[in-house]
Amino acid sequence: MIEYSLDITERKNAEAERENLIHELETALREVTTLSGMLPICSSCKKVRDDQGYWKQIEEYISQRSGAQFSHGLCPDCMEQLYPEWAGKTKRRE
Image 1 (cartoon, rainbow, N blue to C red):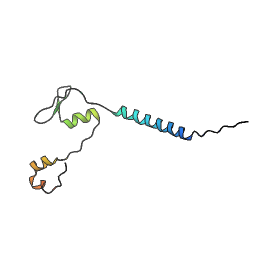
Image 2 (image 1 turned 90 degrees about the horizontal axis):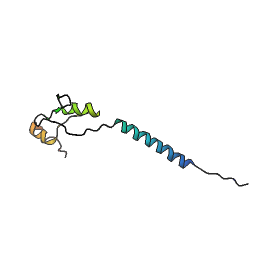
Image 3 (image 1 turned 90 degrees about the vertical axis):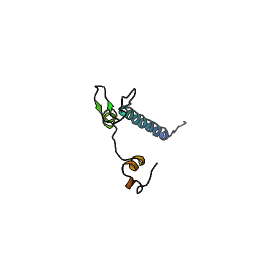
Image 4 (image 1 turned 60 degrees about the vertical axis):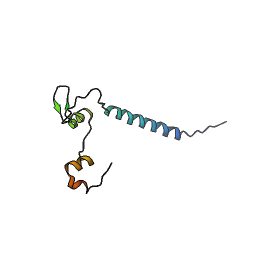
């Protein structure tokens, strides 16, 4: 009588990893919202006109449609223009 023994641990681990990856990708796909098309934006204040014709801050417009959250700061150019006395004291990051 011939007996066969086959270790399928590696295969089972690969299948479990594959299932986990599929689950993560499906979750990410459900959470993705894409902005596309023409976006009417004011050349001066950068407010965006929504589908109802109201002008909103770009941060509000994007966060309502994508779930993105914003954090504000100053880029080096604006820091220099708005606060020249502080611009030289901060490390310039580019």
